[in-house]
Length: 204
Image 1 (cartoon, helix red, strand yellow):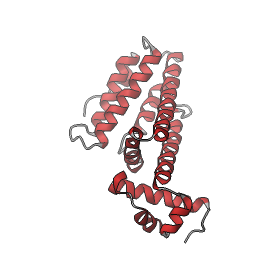
Image 2 (image 1 turned 90 degrees about the vertical axis):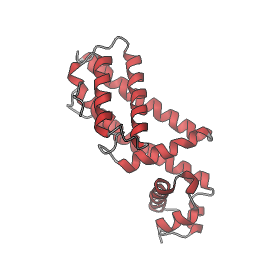
Image 3 (image 1 turned 30 degrees about the vertical axis):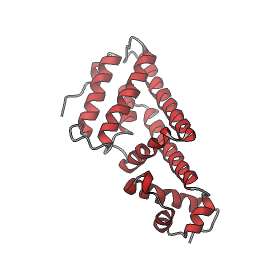
Image 4 (image 1 turned 45 degrees about the vertical axis):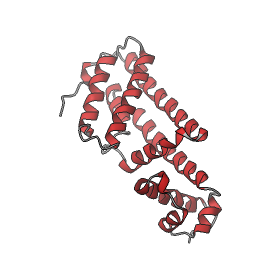
């Protein structure tokens, strides 16, 4: 068993809790099952996280951190055009172009925001981070005369809202909203908002 108090022990525990959450949902989380998945005793789980709520928040926080890291890297890829960066940033949130398990876990955890202020703050912070990345890409596109939106700030907010809605349907098993249609819809709306025909994709 991993020594108590080590970061590797906590990492293993969070990974195991994430698996249990994806399989059983928040309501199905049980300390004993998380412990078994992590190869620990229930007492070791409680040592790291005194309550189930503490464990849930730690899982949510870790998932948001990982997602933010991947998204920021895509949005700020060196030598990539604004159009390529925009689509790469978007695809970080769309299975199967990205880590499906991470996206499914995020949406599972986001449901806690309706009942928990600290989860709500975490989600709000994520929204601001994502919006800032879209604003950065739009501003870069404008400076390079690739984008020409009527209202850059409104365009960035609209793109983020569009993404959230499309991906929600995708991860909720909407049979019509396939990953390719999600990408095509986003790209074509972005082409109109940013007045950039190069973003347009044919429906698949």
